[in-house]
Every structure is written in C-alpha cells, then in structure tokens.
Image (cartoon, rainbow, N blue to C red; front, side, top):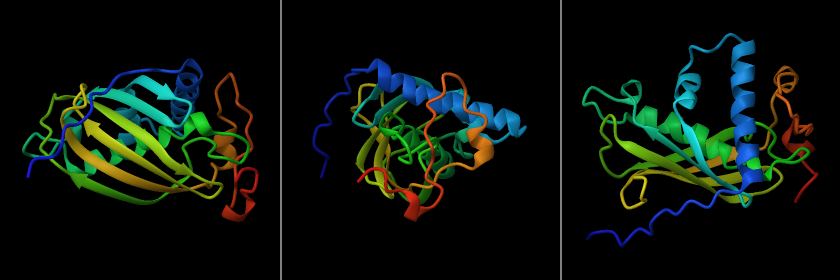
Length: 196
C-alpha cells in the first residue's frame, strides 16, 4: 500500500537558532583541528553540509549532495554513511535548546539509533537532512530525523536517535569558538539537574 502524502518542507529559519546550530558546528571543527583529526569521516562530511534552517523548539535542516565517499559499490548512499550523516545532523537539532548542564556541545552521547532505509539514494542526489527534537529532558533526548528530497516529498532514510546528556571533556570546552556560550556541561548523568 502506498504511503500517504508527505507535507512539503517549507523553510522558516530563526536567526538565534541558526547561530546556535552553527556554533556547535564551528566548535566541532575547532576541537577536531586541535586534535589533528581533520581526516575522520565526520569532519569531511560535516564540511560538505550547509545549514538552511533551525528553529528554537529544536529543529535543524541541512542540505547536501550525496558524495561518493558515503556510497556503497552500487553508488548509492551506504547504510553506514546514512548512519553517520544522521548521527551528526540529529545532534545539531539539540543546539537551540542548550543551556547550563543541558545538552551542551555535540548533544551528549548516542544511546541508540534506529534507522529505516526506505529507498535507494543515488550518488549526487540533492537531499535535506531534517531533524526535530521530540523530547529533551535533563538526562535523555529523542531526536527524529529524515534524509529526504529538498521538497520533502521523497523520504530515503528515517531515524529515531536516543541520546544521553553527558557533556564533552574539559579539553573540548577549552576549544569553544567565540562568541562563547559559556555553558557548564553535565559531566555525569546524575549531575544534570538544572532543567527538568
């Protein structure tokens, strides 16, 4: 049975949310450069993404043309490539919600990711990666994401991404770019009581 109609994607970026999401991206690049880790897949892939939308309620939308290095031998998006793409993009949807001990930088640690591969996504396909925070509490968050066509009518991959609120190590905090948000991270799950 064919799926029901998908509502088209309509951008409505919020300037403050866009700045917060971009700040996390810039922070990641600062940490990776300091650690001399510019050769890892996250770094390369994140450099190929363009932020097109972010919303204060916890949403981020990125665009990209599917690169060959994320593809399998059939020249379509590899399952592992889709996973790393959705891992980093869904994390960024938490950035507009960040506060003291509340989802500081990189959105905590992945607890589980449940991906569903709906259809083939060939190399060079223009896509958006649309991520929405479904729930963000003081210790756990659920973010839903989709890799889909720019108009939102074709969905290639979906994910439910569960994260634990554990902040970055002190050395990562030292590499936060200007202007600094200055949020103290949550170092342990039991230490995350600033927001319910």
